[in-house]
Length: 74
Figure 1 (cartoon, one colour):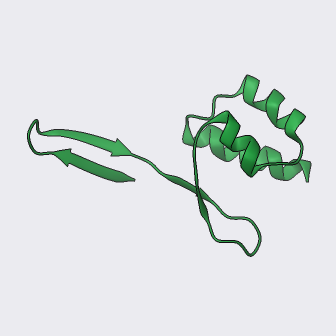
Figure 2 (cartoon, rainbow, N blue to C red; figure 1 turned 90 degrees about the vertical axis):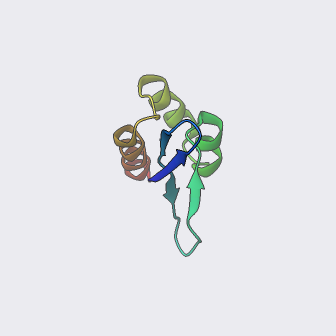
């Protein structure tokens, strides 16, 4: 989690960044967009597409559940 402070307006912005790592690869940042999810999870696209229609991935718990679901398809 990253907290940015704008000194001018004394506002805070909290950002969470998510990373994923496949076997023997460097971890990469995950963008919470459907197109990007299809790129990083290339197999089982139809199953993932159906899952994403039912579940919103803009919440951390749902993103974790997506990866659990994807791993169960392997």
